[in-house]
Length: 429
Image 1 (cartoon, rainbow, N blue to C red):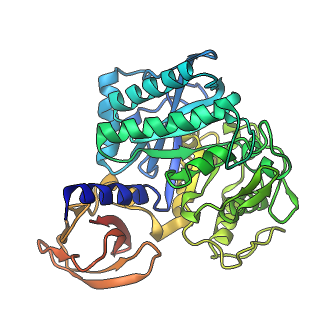
Image 2 (image 1 turned 120 degrees about the vertical axis):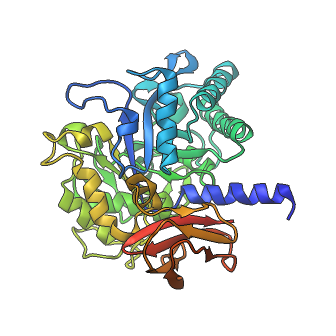
């Protein structure tokens, strides 16, 4: 096979890999807060497979030169901490914006400043990509239609993200991971109106629907929102989780055109880690579990909202929280890392390799990616099965210590290796 085709195949597969469910995404504070104290990046709980470092911010509202400096440690130490997480199979993203930042790329000068500074930050620290958590500014205000926005700010932001992607690919020879974390008004608000903040993220998500890894709408600090059934739902309930999540997976009509559905494995449920983490929208663990089990077709209807797809969405993308720091606080919930533990209890044996192999120093498949064979670092004779990305068993056999397992018969793609109640993810080239 030609080298260029091999590289192209790897980039396509790596993009798919970023979107394999389920994941636990958490925001990490690059500052100390007495209520939610600073955690060294390298000490983040192992259940978090994607870490969004908060935040890259502009120099000023009129100067889009983006800045990020690690708090509490030197840049070299921070780079080493990122590499530690990456060596465990986790992804570390640089999140842009936050609640106190405005992004407006109203001219080519600011667009180019944004591109160049973000590209420099990504290459300097070795981040796996970017998270778009812009909550203020003209670049996230709806105009024109979903397919054809007319605002220069929006057009420039789309162009900027594309150029950052291109620069990243050139620097690292791999695809950049891209996630979006809009507030509900900027997504579901498009059902009631389209313009300004209402539906403001829809053109952005639409522009990158083939490139994005996950969309995790903030289902908190939100007013009431319409579901695709035409009824209104309030934050802080199982119904709100189910209705807002299915809207993304089914698509919906707006005055700016129809928002096309997203694959379920790219949709992640975003909630506060504990009551103090947000101004509103906290949902207790039982209600979260009931909502997600219903969404995945594994449990009864928890409220009044009825799924359009009665079979549910077994490959739902996972969960996100603001924030890892809040989740660690034992005084905010009944115990530390209650949100992370609830994720484990909800998704169980489907956990990605990020939560089951090298992070816990347990079983590891090598090489990964692999072409013809894989090997497992086990000292026991064990039965195993190989599942495809839909969770269907396609191979089974017995692992013998120090003996490789042939996988040349498998097609290129993502697979799950299940053994002794552990599930390890690997990629076949």
